[in-house]
Length: 119
Image (cartoon, rainbow, N blue to C red; front, side, top):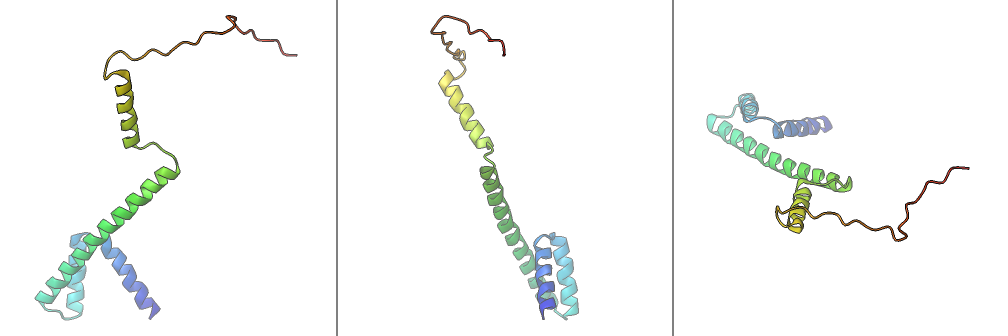
């Protein structure tokens, strides 16, 4: 019983990642082994292809969510973050005008600090 369930699950996962051609071939073999007529075989193929496409969409969404969560946990900058910062910088700089020069701070004592010899 357990082995049958395991095999059925494994086949389901395999079909989820299979191409339409592979699914059609497997469905035709299944139909032949179980004496299904052409109409039933066609219905089975359509059903398996549909389920495969649905599974691909679900898995793609899950992978995307995991990917986003991983990037967030790693505190990496996304392209959207980068582009937003780039736009903000351009806006602050005046949209293509000369960049703002950094402000130089004066030494309040007017003296240059000298390195003291060690020891």
